[in-house]
Image (tube, rainbow, N blue to C red):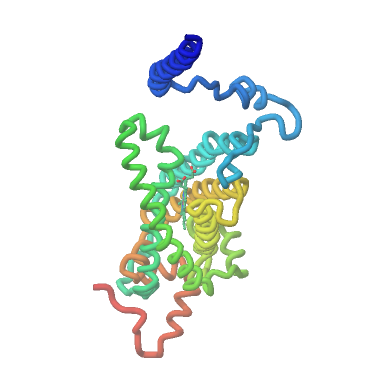
Length: 342
Ligand code: HEM
C-alpha cells in the first residue's frame, strides 16, 4: 500500500507538471516576453542622463557594445553627429537660401538697372566660329546633368520642408526616389563633362595681365566700357575655375557619399556631406549668374553655344584680342572663319 501511494505521488506530480506546461506554454507564446529587456542593461533615463552628462566622452554621447561586426553602429548618438544634424537641418538651409535667393535678387536688380548688354553698332551679318560641335556637345551635356543634379540635390535639402506638405508623403517619396536615381546616375556624365571642360579650355583660362586690366575697368558688363580680352575674359575665367574646382569637389565628396565608409569613417562622411551641400549651394548660385549672362544679360552671347558662331561686332566688343587672333589665323584673301550670316 505504501508503495502504491509512493507511485501515486509520482504520477500526480507528473500529471500536474504536464498540465502546467500545457496551460502556460501557449499563453507565453502569445504574450510578450516577461523578461524586462532593460533591467540588466540600460533604461531610458540612463540614456538621457548620459546625453546630459558633462565632461569628455560624456556629454552628448550614447554608445555601447553591439554583437554585429559593424562596430561603429554601437555609437547611437555622438556630439559630432548632433553638430552635423544641426548643419544639415538648419545651417545648410540658410547657406542655400541666402546664396540662391540672394543671387536671384542681385540679378533681378542688376537687370532692372543695367538691362541687356546690347551689341553696340548692331550686327554686321558676318560671324566668327567660337565653339565647335564637340565643345558645344560637352557644354550642353554637362549643363543638362548639372540642372538635374541641382534640382534633385535641392530636393534632398529642402524637399521635406517645401514639397512634402504640398504633395503629401507618398508622392514626395516617389518623386524623391526618382530624384535620387537621377542624382546618382547623372553624376557620371557630369564628372566626365567636367574633366573634358578642364582639358578643352584650360589653355585659354590661365589668368594673365589682361585679366587684371579687365577687372580694373569693371569688365564689359559693369558700366559701358569694353576692355580688351582674349577668348575668355576674367569673368568667364572665374566661371571656368568655379566649374572645374566646384565640379571636382562635388564629384569627390559626392562619390564618398555614394559609397559610404569605403576608406572613410563617420567623421569623414560628415565632412564630405558638409562640403558637398555647401559647395552645391554656392555652385548653383554661380551657375545662375552664368545662365543670366548667357541669356537675357547679354545680346548675342547665347549663339556662341547655340549655333557655335557669334557676330563679328559682338566679338569685337567683348573679345577684341581674340577676334584679332582669329583674323590673323586666316590666310589673306580667304575667310573660312568669318562667314556671312544667312
Ligand atoms: C559627380 C557629381 C555628384 C555626385 C557623385 C553626387 C552625389 C551625391 C550624393 C550621394 C548625395 C547624398 C544623397 C543622399 O543623401 O541620399 C548628394 C546630395 C546632394 N547633392 Fe550631389 N552629387 C554630385 C554633384 C552635385 C552637384 C553638381 C550639385 C549641385 C549643383 C549637387 C548638389 C547636391 C545637394 C544640394 C545635395 C543634398 C545635400 C544635403 O542636403 O544633404 N550634387 N549628392
